[in-house]
Length: 247
Image 1 (cartoon, rainbow, N blue to C red):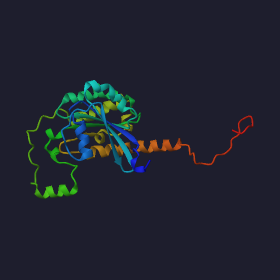
Image 2: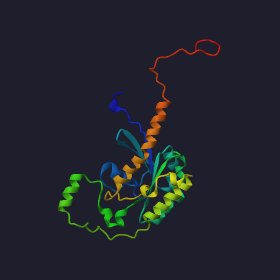
Image 3: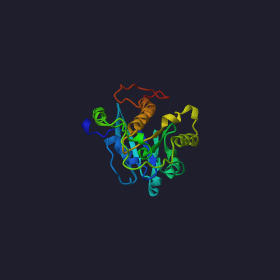
Image 4: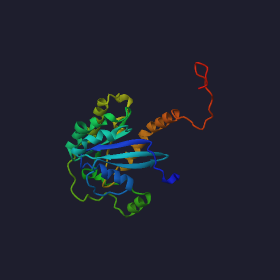
């Protein structure tokens, strides 16, 4: 089979979990396709493959609906990182992460990394209307034409129900649930984010930070695979059994 037609094998798995309508799929589309689009609810799960340097990272977008809840633990199996997403304007979506989704991560790797993400920040914070996913050329041209301050949002800002401090507190509870030593894990200020799939705010920062954090898992996996690989091309040497016969 020609090299270009072979399916690339993922080096590591990242899984996205969260209630329906928090914007999981929109976040992933914003990162992979560089644009925002309204999406319908995910059925089961969707798979994306992202090349990160020389490595291939599989990103699993899971369904938030109750009827697909049982599939979550299957998608989490062997995950090196789990991104837990809530809606900053919806306290219940934050509560559901701990009540309904955290137990699904029991099948993830023992050293799985967790990120807590509050999406839809553009609805509560004017600064979230600045995108980090624009090309430098687009940003420069817009900067020349734009006024010194950000334009007002399309609609009045909503009340923010979940603060970043709440996300950091949840991160601590996640580590305790997993039986991990908080002092030995990544600090909460590096693993908690607020994003906007609509404007692109912090989207690149989120995914690229997570990819950087799973790099040790990729290197460990490659090292383990290399040490367990048998070289069929290597010359064979005769071995003798205990009774003196050739093996």
